[in-house]
Length: 222
Image 1 (cartoon, rainbow, N blue to C red):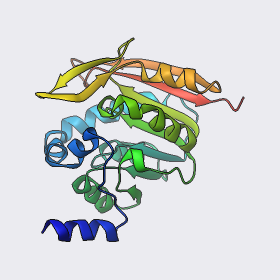
Image 2: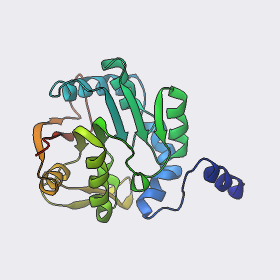
Image 3: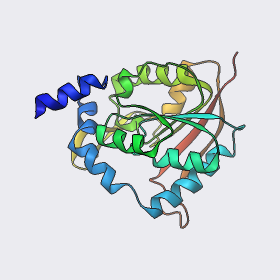
């Protein structure tokens, strides 16, 4: 059975030869369980409020790609708020990638973000709750990939900390890292500017999120 799965993945152009333990973690059973925990009407409503706020500080966008889209809950909201938007998704977990395919109208890259090769630019590159789970040594490569893929905007929504720290994540070590992701991108790419930022609180009575700090960055072309 294992050999059959590997063969099917090769036929679909999907590499399962991961570079880091974090990739293997999210591609496997833990990633499958995450799908079940993070969906429902309350999640959809919270995402709607969150994404509306993000879009309000941008000029209109016609194309969005999400790095680490899971089953597409965020993309579903973009579709509702921006009729006719072109959507793309990168997703390492094959079960989640299949859900994305079933949504229809989404260009799906069923692979690790670390394996993604930017093919063309989108107006907005969006990432939410994903950079915190990437091996810190691999972050520069992810930043480069996001930057190259963005035509104008990059939105990061992650756990913030002024200095890098590691936390235990659901009993697992080496799987959750907080830092100033946006600040690192601003320092790495001189033509990026900070458009807006904010905090989404888990105790918000209308649209709770998981204590995320979000940042919208824009390419200035300078």
